[in-house]
Image (cartoon, rainbow, N blue to C red):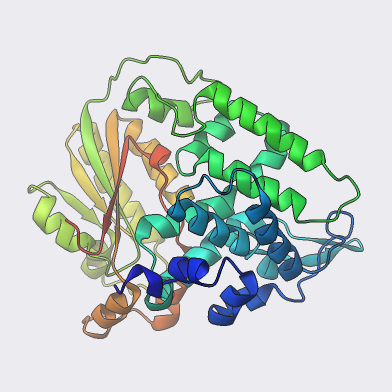
Length: 380
C-alpha cells in the first residue's frame, strides 16, 4: 500500500474537503446524479445535490474542528457516500419516489467498491469498515425512537460504529435537505445523543458482564443488558467466514490443532457435486456430521464461506443449542490476490460467481458469536 496521501482519505484533506473534487477522482459518486427523491423530504434536488449539501453542512458543525484528522476524513467520506445505496433502491411507488433499505444496500455497495478498488481507495480494513457502518446506520438517529427495543438497536449499532460520529453525520444529513418539516430530524438526533450517553455507549460498545451475557443479550428477547449470566457453555466451535480463496484452509492448517473439520467444499468433492449445482445435499450431510460432534461435545471447525448474517445466525443457533461457544473467524485477502489464486486453482470459480459473492458479503459483526475475529491479508 502506498502513502496515506495517495488514497481517498488523503485526497479528501488535500482537496480541501470538496465533494465535487472527490467525485472527479472517484467517479463512483457520479452514480448519485439524477437519482430522484421524494420532494416532501428532499426539495433540494437529486441525491448528489443532497449529498454535497450534507458534506458542506458537516464542515459547519461546531463539533467538526475538535475531531481528529482521521475522524474528519472518515466522516466526510461517509457523508459523501451515505446514500450510495439509493441508485440501486430508488423506485417510483404510488406516485412517490422511495428508496427502501438503501442504508443496508449502501453498506454493501461501498464495501465492494472500496475492496475492488483498493489500489485507488487505499483504505485499511478498519477504515473501510467504519465508513461502511456509518453508511449503514446513518438513519438510526432519526428513527431509533420508533424501534420496538430502542436500547437493543443502539447497543447493537455501538458494537460497530461510534455513536458520536453517527450523531454528527445524522445532524449534517438533516441540515443538508429542504423538507416540509425542518428541524424534526435534528430533534430526534438530540434524543438519540441523550439516550446513547445514558446507556454508556456514546464513545464505546456496551460493557457487558461477560462474553456469554453479551451473546445472550443479542440473541434473546427482552433481556436487560446489565444482567449477569452464568456461562454454562461446554466446548468450542469455530465457524470460518469469507469469500473463497481468502485463506481459510491455510488458517485451519496453521491453527486447527488437529480438530475435526467439516468442509462444504470437501463434501462436494467427496460426493462429486459441482459448485454450480444445488448445495442442499452437501449442507444436509455437513449438518448431520456436525450434530454427531455436537452431541459428543467435541470441538470442531465448520469451514464454508458463510457470507450472510442469516446463514451464520442459523448455524450459531444450532451450535449454541448444544452448549457450544461459537468463534467466528472472518478472513480476507486483497481483491487482486483473490483473482490470482483463482487463476491457478484446479477447480476455478467462474468469475461472475466470485464477483456475486463479493457483492453478497455481509461483514460479521462482533455480536454475532461468542467471539468474532478478523484475519486480514494473511495475518494468521
